[in-house]
Length: 353
Length: 91
Image (cartoon, rainbow over all chains, first blue to last red; front, side):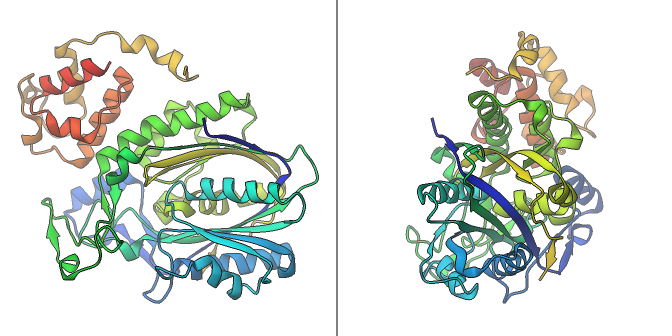
């Protein structure tokens, strides 16, 4: 089974940047009762939407820029940058290469992109931690940038996606620690049989963009979108997540003999309130231990775990020693959980672009 | 693998009969009167049926039976009784 137990890893800082434009779900064009029902079920009052000329990489850049300044890290010391997103700048080159130059990082720097959504921060963290550990001290500092601008790929006329998703970019700073006790532990899993549960049909190389890709299709119930826009099967995603997310967390706890009571916060991917509350209740977790940023920022794909930590936990992150469990789950289908500790880390207030 | 939250729920997985299931099914609806729900009711024709009620049904089945029904299984069932049979097969 895909468990990882990686020593010599320290999470030193987390930051998040969101667009300043707020999109209020109270003005989403639905009948009043239906709209109220939708808002209370998904738990999203408003979310941030980026301008046409702002990309995931821009949000991540700003989050990283401010984090590096607060950490007082010299860009010369950063040997690794990983960018996780499903909304890169271009089909090619990889956005991480562009960010390496933009952040002023040296040429002796390992970079690449990972294409994952809601599980992206967990997978990115596992990858970057493995690399830093393998560097055996040669890679001292590393940056994990996770962000998405799902608003650019969802149809405003699709009530199953538009009211749910918001845009955000995040930066997580990782350091090589000489202390063998600084460990980070993961459980990671995949079920490609659910690949169609969340997908965009056209624009890749299976179905190359064509004139038909722009055609607006009707799916009943007022849902309209093109094949270039996000298609989300709520039922399939829901039944996957209520079973696999709690299982993953339970598996992580069991495999590594963790004490549930010693965990200060369980930060979950912000899928939607109805689903997240089912996950919380199945794991029998107290409300105070499970933070939410859904109401103000919506579901921000892979950025949602670090964004929630920044917006909801930053006082504690700055001032206390904390034990965390986080779980990300979604598109792929792909999911994973992580256990790690932080000790008074750098965590600036969330930044507006 | 035995999950730590599983033990506590076990007593709830005792066999529920069809009538109880129809009752549980009806409880997930806010507006439709309980009397409208029968074993042979074609639930997707109920006006209140929609993506959100579908999720509450999936969640109810997960809680009561520890069975995860998929979207395609809901799509395959016409009546409440048919859905109950699908669940019983998986339980």
